[in-house]
Image (cartoon, rainbow, N blue to C red; front, side, top):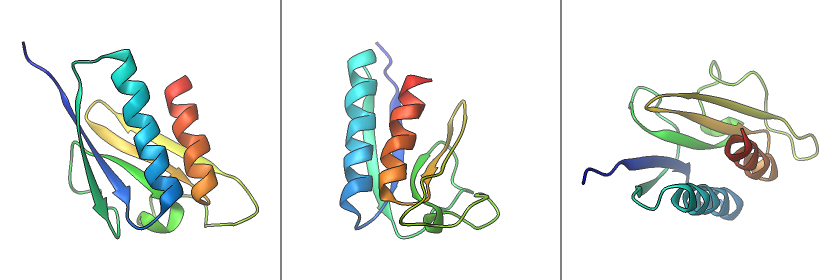
Length: 106
């Protein structure tokens, strides 16, 4: 049986973003237990690398990819996915977790 490996590129050194990536894995695995995951930590997202689902705060992504800046107080999310990857972003780590749950809900 073929199984799919989902590669997650998460922002390094952020406990909330790490939790969000673990929640993403946990819920996707509950949907399909044949999925496997490869979670990699990065200091910056490199969107030229394909077939990765990137997850992090706005400053993790190239500025032209997010239409907002980081903010501790204001929550904003951006979810942009395609068949083989995409991004889940938030204005702050809390927003990344909100964006992750929104992605799963949709």
